[in-house]
Amino acid sequence: MKLGAYLLWAAVAAGAGLLVLLGYFVDTQVILGLRLLLMQWAVLLAAAALLIGLINLLAVHYRKVSLQEPGWPYSALLILTFLVTLVLGLFFGPDFQVVLLLFNYVQLPVEASLMALLSVSLLVAGVRLVARRRDVFSLLFVGTALIVLLGTAPWLAAGDSAVAEGFGAVRAWVTQIWAAGGARGILIGVALGATATGLRVLLAVDRPYGD
Image (cartoon, rainbow, N blue to C red; front, side, top):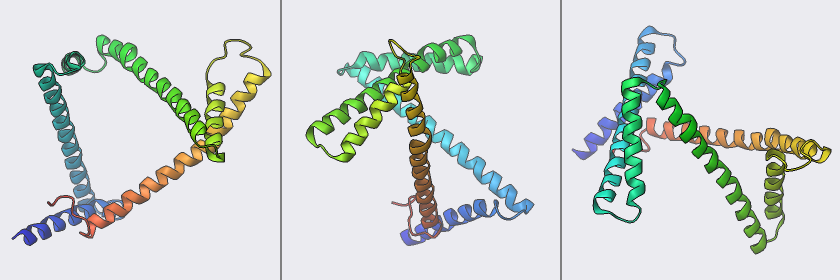
């Protein structure tokens, strides 16, 4: 019985994947309609999974507030801001003035601050790495981080000097050539991994829908 259920779910997953895949190569109205229907179902399931995740997040923080565990005021603030933003977005839409103010003056500054902390943390981690292990790759990491920071951040003095412009040019060369090439390589690797995983699911080698 259990083997039969596995085979049934494997057949359903393989059939759905093959129909969606064929929709990109076969120009048939039936196949295209089935592909669109399956993709719409996938979007609905993803939205349901996101909703369940949000409910679980609220439940975890509500329990933390109820038990007054360490850090419960932050959980209460999270619940309050989440509910206020959700109500405003549902009733007035994402273009409502208060929603835009919250996004522009709360969300964006917080994200920018986190990115700034990330850059400083990476630089500190690189310095500690050089202090513990001095090799070519550690020095290259710290040097690249310093060049990018000096080429991006505003200078307190002589911001229009040749040195500042030189750091900016080197920073642009590093980010637009080396960093962009590395990012594309990572994306290609992710795409190949996703393709291999999808093929394994289509061939019923992997069964993530089973126990």
